Figure 1 (cartoon, one colour):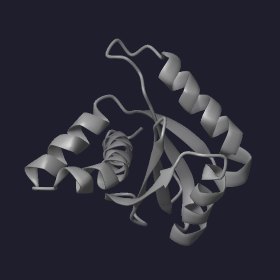
Figure 2: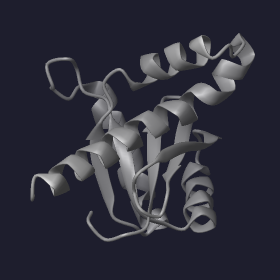
Figure 3: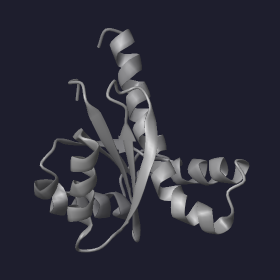
Figure 4: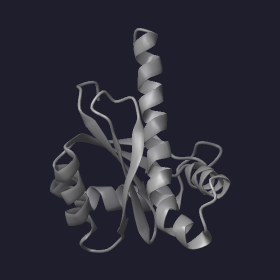
Length: 145
């Protein structure tokens, strides 16, 4: 994904989906929303795609510390496959290892109470995943790749 435009990041969990968005230049990722995972999730995520003007979707892929994909990764891929037509955008996967625990620690360090953390952790995790993707892309462009 090299063309300019805003990227949408997703952290797909069993119950909730965190949504993040990048700036137009693809430098900074910010938490945007949390969607409850259900049969209407694709429609809700498409609404965020439209409202935020995303040109591509980056989905966090839960892989083990060894780098191998397990049942959670298969669940995420199956979910994304089920909504891909609704999204109507290119989809890329990105390693999401430790993103939720980093998001939790960030929210705790910033004084977020338990209930607030529960509401925000998925969107913050999505922004961590998306930021990792953006940083990697920046690094690759500096290396001439």
